[in-house]
Image (cartoon, rainbow, N blue to C red; front, side, top):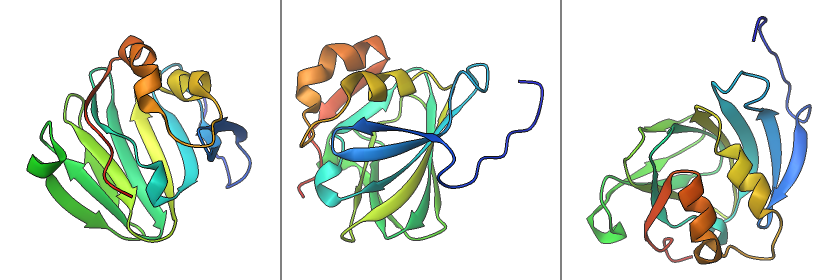
Length: 154
């Protein structure tokens, strides 16, 4: 990447991941693999299982709503729990188990992955009426993601 990139809300390409409409704010191809950034609106039923990435760090900026984060252990019951409101920044380094779930009816989130290869997983799974992460454990493994526990109850 040889120049700065400015991308306003709604200017990124869109794709479906489960029942999310995701805006690809910045893709890994645009940043020579350095970062991928997505924006989406999440509902409590869209929470991912407790998992960890072996290849990238993950950050979130809560744009609206409130989001609960579970971090640091391989079971939800043992995780540290943190609530984040609009404007909050949350960071999870690679290999640290984590998950997130809105505690409001919806939350808009900016998700940042460094480096950016994980966006291929989101696009490979594609659209579905509801989350079915257990059906894609082999795909998650190819992207260096390990699942430890189910998602938080909706």
